[in-house]
Image (tube, rainbow, N blue to C red):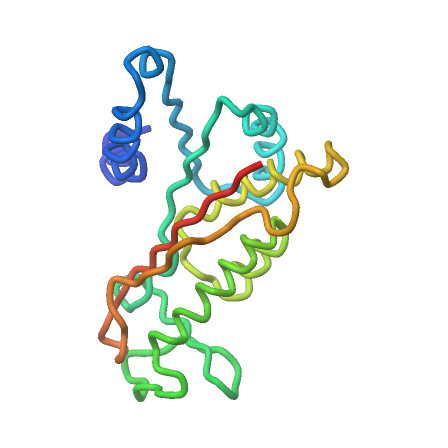
Length: 199
């Protein structure tokens, strides 16, 4: 990885303070036994996500391991080149700087609806459902590929245990926020969501 790529990559730096805080609560004996193995995932294809899911599934199944995936959800606004808008009664479109400000629904509600569609796809535990939702909405979920890999790994584990690995929805989202509520095309926001899965 080049220095410029490393400087732009910030997902692990966002998590390390929280991981450090949680590890500092463990006894000194437990702390010395823990290792962090960062896995950087770039742009991949669905088949590559499935292959990495198969490779990582045994490690995901090991109760001694914890996987942490970092991702924002929608990066909305002209500065992100993503202005997808889902009107209440017509087909989706990309808003332009000359577009009249939509109100049915307001832009921030449309963003929330698109993010919720992605969240529901993740909660379903179906890798293809997540990929289809991303494809349909072009949502700018920056961690879509690592999310896809973990979803693929969980599907492998579920298949290996004839569906006994998880009951109901394998992922649970606990919080969703946006940096701001966009009202006009001049506004921008980034969405954040927190989830966990327990095998």
